[in-house]
Image (cartoon, rainbow, N blue to C red; front, side, top):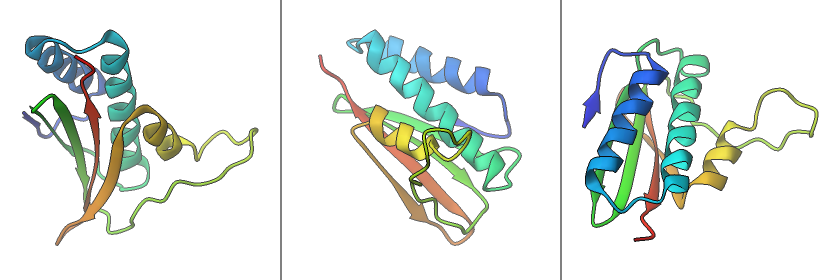
Length: 121
């Protein structure tokens, strides 16, 4: 499924949750992790990628969820080590902790940041 031109976190989260529910066998905790990681990637695309409507795409294949968020910035994200008092800078650390795999793929224009989660079922 691809979501275009919708900067709505609510709509993106709902579409992801619906797809995982329709597919069945996803632990509610994994669904929650998927939603949180998605929100982090979208917010990063807005804040750091300068993209008002990032392209969100997800699929479920062989019990693996893959979510991608594409923005127009060439800057590749890096997890930051931040102090416990910092108000920002932990988004990719959160994505890394919530997902099984994640990465960034440079594109001709911008980049795609992705993560994967495996079903426990």
